[in-house]
Image 1 (tube, helix red, strand yellow):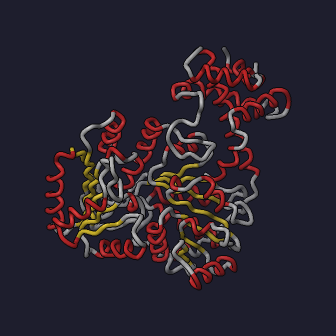
Image 2: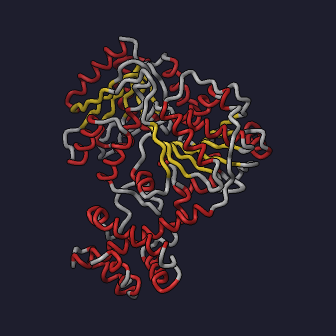
Image 3: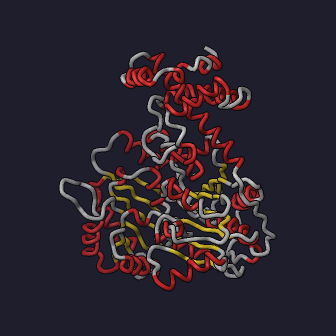
Length: 510
């Protein structure tokens, strides 16, 4: 059967709803391989058509071309030369910002590769062009880290940078809101607080989203709607989760890669250790701390629950504190902000030597003297989380180690995941494997990961049939009048049946 014949009959699109429902039920039960392939193909065709419609719509969006003169960027307080990858990424972003259609670009780089400097350069272009820039971070810890870093690097530029989080109240918050509204604040860094209804911007021209997989599509859309015109969007991540990777593969996001590390960075020695050797690990931590270095111990839960065997941070903290004294501090998301901040500050200053935490430290913690990471029950974490947690060490010039403490009964997937962590530190490689292990997430929906978004098509069918569906969708859009005419009418019904009609707008959220 030729590629054209797959779409020409319009079989699925011409079926009445009961018949389509019955065919789908048969396909789900594994009945009639040919019928299942046909339904899978039509589903993939609907997906390809929806993506092409989004691409077409994005090109028609009215954005604001941003061209800076470089005067502020020339005054950046950089303590190191830019890598070739940073220079290349900045040039790619600068080219995008100069276009009238809004940028939608992903900046991928492992922890420590210099994403923040690239983002700052893009934000300065927006300011030089008369606009404002906003950087959205998933946690308050990361937002404060970014604000501190940006303020230090941009100290000589004369740019006004504000921090806005849910903790800001009263007159301080009102002053920030007024500064964003009248334009006296050029850049704002914050959590979800920066896109609440009460926050208005004079001229929001660029949105930077760090660790973009931590935000729902709806949240990202809300921030994008804060501009007078659709703002340019730069998403950043150290490990593209499957959904982002899929977007990139389908061409809806351009990708810049920071594939060079700054001079002096060493690879992290990653080892998998059985839980039976936990006492050996604790003894090794003792020797590590005696040598003047610091360490992390990460648990998957805050406290133990009945009928749960997951490691709890509070119990682990108590045990390690009994062993090593008050140099052990605890951080998790349920602590009051002032207690959490005090613990983090003690650790950052080197007064505390061992930080016990949940995944709240996954992003935004930068302590170069911390060179040992222990992740308890590592098989419970996804690849992206493991990679991010590992990235909390290896941030200085010293050699760092990550110990993945595993339980006794591993599934085949968990075993493969831990083996991959030992094998590679390449974020894109890990994302590709995550895609294979977990599925692609919902490309046109709001799920970020998990099973494939397709109700019929399996991963095997996607590999086999997607190229055909993509080519036929392109023929329909470019040569057959798009959604107009008889075949276009069948295609519209196809989009409706596979629920791709309402989902296309969500892609603008990245």
